[in-house]
Amino acid sequence: MPADEDRQRGDRQRLDRWLWHARVVRTRAAAADLVRSGHVRLDGARVTGAAHAVRVGQVLTVSLNAGVRILRVRGFAERRGDATSVSELLDDITDDVGK
Image (cartoon, rainbow, N blue to C red; front, side, top):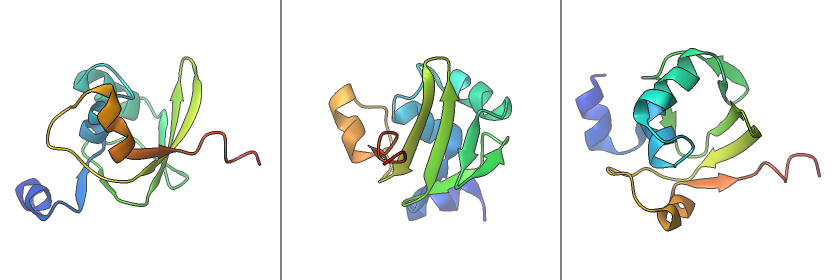
């Protein structure tokens, strides 16, 4: 399915774009580099394509310099919002995993 149709459907989004909108990284290029370098897992499987689609409910494991974050996708945005809008896009379940 072409990417334009995905965007119109609103049920998925490119992984690099979602990471950038969710403010996991500062730039979209940094998000793409993070994925390409193998530092992102989607539902436990390593993803190396920045254009890989993510859907609501999927779990991302992201390895960053500051540590590992585990995020559940809650939604999508068309634009990168302020820090308060991040809660609409994700649930940070990093602390819940070890319990």
